[in-house]
Length: 225
Image (cartoon, helix red, strand yellow):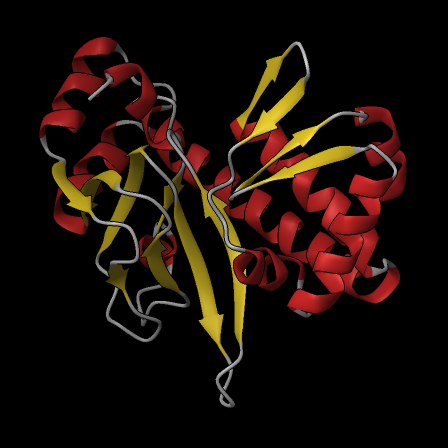
């Protein structure tokens, strides 16, 4: 496991090497197989997690069984920290999109770190504030943006975190099924597939299994606005 990836998480913000090493030693490693559930919406929450390899999705299920994806997280990203500030049931279900390596930290291990290093608490609060801003943005997109615009925006976000530049474009291995991509943008699979097919016909991107190759970044950016 790459220590540099783990220390990208806001949890390590402001810590010197000794403090970071001590915190890292308090964390518990775990592994999930693709499709395995880490915790369910409504479960008691007493740990935060950092993804060190792979991807995990956070989602909610409506009373009628429809699913909505809140986020796709990759290496260096953190989740579950809300339980430290607002103890209660989990607000989402966490499921492995790929095989995933994680590190977890319980309340009892984090509390002395927060007391000794206020910068860590500030970093966690900044992360929560950022999540709230993203939630507000998603709500605005659902009201003001059409499905193709939301698809373009989602692809650009995935490209920014998981993309790899190559001679033929930006390779984005998002590892999502078309149904999961539709859940991420809050639309039906048929409508999302239509948008993707339209982008492909315009040579803005090329579709691959669980991935896309962005061929015209500028056009996709304009469509996302």
